Each structure stands twice: as C-alpha cells, then as structure tokens.
Length: 174
Image 1: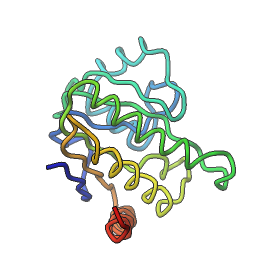
Image 2: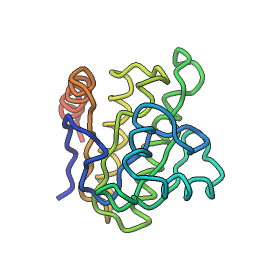
Image 3: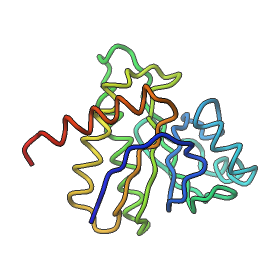
Image 4: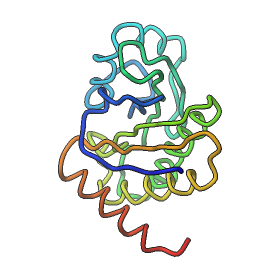
C-alpha cells in the first residue's frame, strides 16, 4: 500500500532508498538542506556532483548517498519565489514530479523530501505544501515501484503547513 507520511525530523538521518536534496543549480552544495546533505554525505557526494555539470530548475539528477543512511540522493533545484508570477508553482510541481519519476525509474521504494524552495528561495510554505502534497498523491496513485514518500519538516511551522495541506487534500474527491 502506497503512503504519504509527514513528520518533523532531520532529512540527513532518513533510512530511505533516497533523500531529496533541495539543491541549487550548480549541485555543488550551499546552505540549508543542501549544505546539511553535503556535509553529512561527505566529500564523495561533491565529487560526483561535479561530474553532473549542474541541473536546471525543476529537473532532477541522482547520485549515491555516500555516508548518508539513504542509498541515493536525488537533487532538484527549486524555483526562487518572485510573487508567483513567473511559473513558480509549475516549476515546484516539476521538482517533485521529476524526483519521483527518477526514483521510479531506478526501482526505488521509499523517498524522503524536504520542503523544497521554502527556505532562502522564499516560496511561501503554505503554497509550497499544497503543491507538494498534490503532486505526491497523484504520483503514488499510479506508481509501480515507489511505495512510501515522507515529507521531513525541519521545524514546527513547516510541519503544520504540510499537515494542513494533507488534511485539505484528503477532503477532495478522488
């Protein structure tokens, strides 16, 4: 049975097939989730990312997990928030969708996501949560391999936003 779980935690400690990195387009590390994943995974991750030659916003690339408990890291650069007038929602949906498609293509069963773009990129967390939950649920409804998706929230405010989005989506007709 496929499921979506929302919880507070540290994504670098997730024991899943893959964790998603809210990366920048260089894939060479940065702050927030990106910096934490690179620090926890060790120098092998940076070395492999250098060979990937970056990644466009909304797209996704996969690497090994190195010293992380997860076997893989799926990197996706999210959109910077510009008021919602520059296709941010579509780009954010593409991040989640492309990560899940990559996991599916690699036969992975479990994936953990952070809240993409809601840190320094400024995407409003309530709006981001609604996009994420919708895309993940649509994907799980048709997935053959991916059985479990977790959204791992760094703080209580983010957790509350994702829980609210999940509750709202449950009330919608299927």
